Amino acid sequence: MRRLAVAYLILQAAGAFLWWVILLAVPLSRPYFRAADAPDSTLLAFGVADALLFIGTSAVAGIGLHLRRRWAWPVLCVYAGAAGYAALYCWTLTALTGDAALGAILMTPSLVVPGLLVWQFRPREVAP
Image (cartoon, rainbow, N blue to C red; front, side):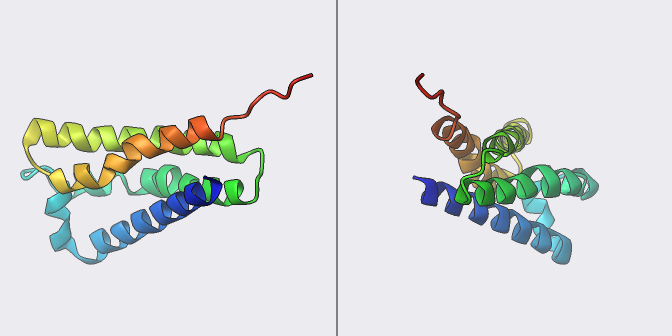
């Protein structure tokens, strides 16, 4: 399970990084991820938060789990919160506007998997 979790976290970070590269390099990709009448700035404003709280914590948690470090679990918890927030935002945007469904669909694993990983890798008390 640990290998699968590490792979998911590292691939999630890499995929999100690549997604941002595409958004920045190919402006025509942006309408698929924002409300139709909204300016690009409503999407691009998430860049710093995504870089730190979604991409960064996903990569760091993956590395920490791979190295079996105790600090990996709190980092994983931060990632789970950021991922859940982002995924719920995407689904709410789609529900309210009918737009940006691709973003919501792509974020669905981020709504489910991080919480399962937090549970799976939670610290357990050692019996006395």
